[in-house]
Length: 295
Image (cartoon, rainbow, N blue to C red; front, side):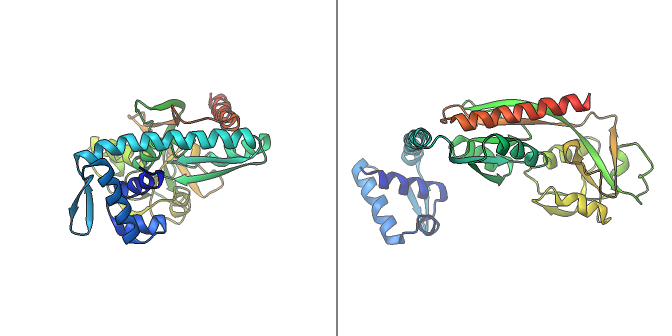
C-alpha cells in the first residue's frame, strides 16, 4: 500500500466521480482508476460500487475512509508542526468564516503583531465549514451559528443582535423598532440559504406566520447594505455589520429577542502553532473590547 493510493482514494471518495477527482489531482482518469484498483487488490475488497460513470462508496469504503482521513490528518499535522519549527515567523493561517463583518478589524490587529504571517480566508456556508473543520483543513472558523461536534472546540465570543435595515425613504424609517409581523409584505435582500443569519431569520419569521420574500440572494453579506440603500429591498443585518455611513435606518425587532451567537471554532487535534494561538487571543481580545463598547 502506498501513500499516493490513499490520497487518490480520498479524492475519489469525496467526489464519488473519477473524472472530477482526476481533474482535481491533475492526473489522467486511467491512471487514477488503475491506482484505485491496485488499492482494492491490496485490501482484498471493493471499496466502491460502480454506478454508470459514478463510484459510490460501499460499506467497506465508508469504514476505510474514516481510517484514511485520520491517518492523513495526522501526517499533515506533523508537516505543519515541522514547518513551524523550521520557520516560526512565517507560514499561513487557514481561516473560514460564515460572516466577515468584523474580520478586517481582527486581521489588522493580528498583522500588527505578526506581520510576516500570511492568511487565507474562505467564505463558507455552515455545511462547508463543518466539512473543513472535521477534516482539519482550517486553523480556525468564525461561525454563526456555533457548531457542536465531538472533535470541534467551540467558544462563543459574542452575542450579536439582529437588526432590520431599511432605506431612509422607507415607510418604517422614522421608527426605532418594528414587529416582525409588520414585514410580511416587504421585499428582502439576503444571503443564500445555508448561511447562519439567513437560516436563523427564516426560521424566526416562519414562527410568526410568514416566509420572507427575497428578491436578491447572494453570497456576499457586505453587498446587502448597498442593496438596501438602493431601495431594492430591506434586510436583516447583524449589529456588527451595520454601516452608519450609509443612507440606512436600523430598527430593533420588537417582541422577539433575535440574536446570533458568534463562535470561534477549531479542531481539537489540529496542531496549533504559536502564531495560531496568538491569533486566537486577538479574536478573544477584540470581542471582549466590543462587549465593553456596547454596555
